[in-house]
Image 1 (cartoon, rainbow, N blue to C red):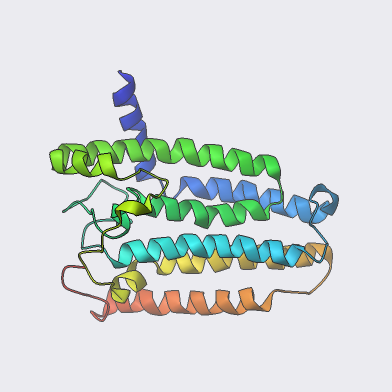
Image 2 (cartoon, rainbow, N blue to C red):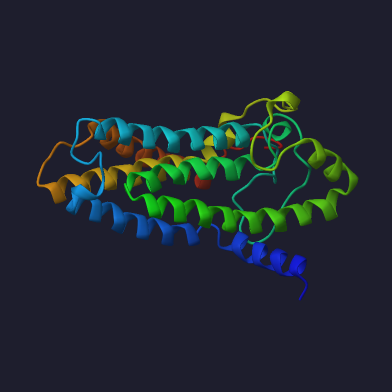
Length: 250
């Protein structure tokens, strides 16, 4: 099999399981985080007054990723930039808004969302391994996705791809989005991400305090976790049982 076909085949497989495989990394990261809590001497900031600032920075990184995803999804039409995993879907090629700045904004958002918990482990080598894994993982998904888009949209895709960077944003070509921002689509599509971010940080905070034999919980994270999970339950019900979150073309 030629390398091009092999990379595409790997990308299609990884695309199908892109919601499951990162959980393996999360399990490893959780183990390393707990190890850092048990052996605080392994991380320079552990147990110092600066630890809370570091943890806040990690949370802000994850929320930055969620904000990128929110902005992206809120400006896209139906059947583009979705969470589908069975096959590639694109009824049109998004080229305006954030897609005039970077070709894969959702994967950029994912990087920041996962980078926060990865940094929370306090393990330098795990962070290096995470970035390497992310690069290899999404490089193949992006390859397969771009092959699909090239075949479907032809010259329209290649002309756009020549001007817009794949992953590192280039703001000089920004073009206002063709569509207005839709909070309904964001609430319907990104409720999972919001709940996941605060659940992970809440679990890290509670487990770290319990291991240390203290109860100095981060109540902001605790309250945000409860509210985000409650919001997730409500929005899931509304999505399945009502048409409140439905919007024509979105």
